[in-house]
Length: 223
Image (cartoon, rainbow, N blue to C red; front, side, top):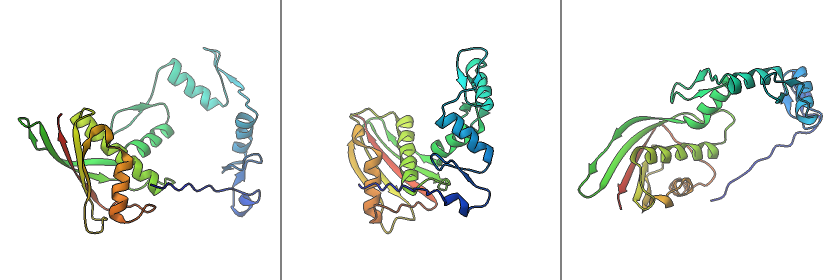
């Protein structure tokens, strides 16, 4: 599978085209406020740390960083909780990034079928996929979605490395057939295999899309 990496190089006149935008003269990073450029230069390029912690020897680059350091490290407080998994974070920004990267879908329905005598299970799960986050490429998003789905099955059904597992994936965006991943050892099932299989079904290695709900049949045989 090929992965495409796009790099955008900004020239010195880039920011003159945009009203109320300011660019760092060293690296061209954009900022909406002029004072942010000054702070960026002092802390990133000149490595200044003018705000020392009065509890430990650490020095911070900004007042907000110092406040966050004290809150998290010395007071052990993380006031921002995720409403999906209850994990707590020190800042709203980190919580937002967590949601973007970790909660890309929700489980709508899980219909398990298990035969304990033959150590076999056949589980059909419907995932409701959330829209692609802003500023995230479709390929990165696709990888994160299926990484999360594989982790869901691993956490829910606890397969051993040598247990045999397989997937059948259905979505209305797929042309006219499901994506079928044949039975293999659990340790050999990874995101790249899933992406490659769906790529073959969609006959594309650069454009991926999921419309509506995603139905996944997870088969597992205990070895």
